[in-house]
Length: 185
Image (cartoon, rainbow, N blue to C red; front, side, top):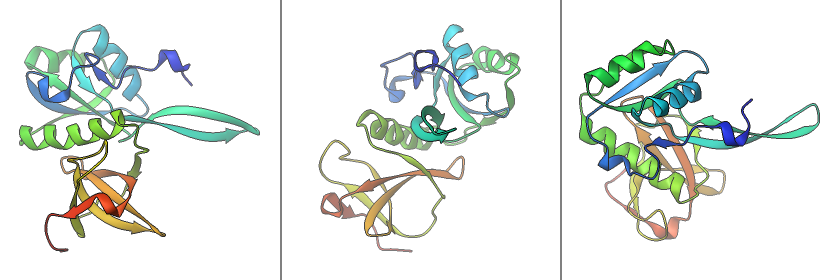
């Protein structure tokens, strides 16, 4: 387990919004448990990437442990030209590179995940949803996010999807700040 200071930044270059990255986006399907090591290598090689992560608290031998884990296990998103893609493949940490057909859609979906993380939202991995009510957040630090609302016990959750991966993450949200975008499927 890495010390907190040894974890890679969520994106490289740090502080630059994903929408401002230049080049073609790719999805690196990493070898098992290689996401953070790959991110560290890409930062050293100055290859732009996005690795959404969240803190997870667990207990081992009666002790509380905090770990920073990838939100989408086995995946890292990177942006660049063909030489950058080759640098990623040379790391020997990637099982394969997935070409992104719809660049605009992926950047839009990843930007929502980025905004939620920067707002301090407690994102959790969630089953990918294809049905339900699409809504947009109208107020607060998450304003502008859109996703599918589901009910989880008594609270509403907003599911933010990454269609390219067939994966999603969800956040608890107050229904007062949601407006419907379309009718349920």
